[in-house]
Length: 195
Image (cartoon, rainbow, N blue to C red; front, side):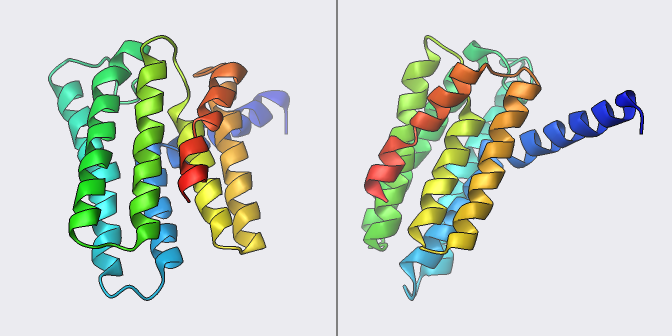
């Protein structure tokens, strides 16, 4: 295979990892893993579904509505300023999800994780006012933290490899600098503290 063909394969891999690492998509396995961690809670399927709606579906719909209204330049939110409203919506949705979890008496592990993600999104929002931090890296790092709490080494290695590939893809595709990716990874601190 010539160098152009290899480059094409690398470009495709970076593109696919960027899609797989999109924050709304990674929120789904995070919610699922939280459900596994909480165990035999009778309403776990409903709670996981609610968490997916709050932290993935609703922010995605808000982003799509902003795009359709011409308020963002792309659905990928490449510009820092395009991220402010969707980030606010996502953080607000997490706050609403925490209240919902408390009212429905969800397991503390689920409520704490939802609060951790909400604090992470609030931190990302504050940083976004001044700098373009990688949300892909942030959510990928949170997936690693949540996966690690289950105590399965194979799962931990798997999500760690996925997160590393997502971070690489964001840099390779020139969507972020190394510093922006590292800053995104570090925002997982609230998730780590509350998991």
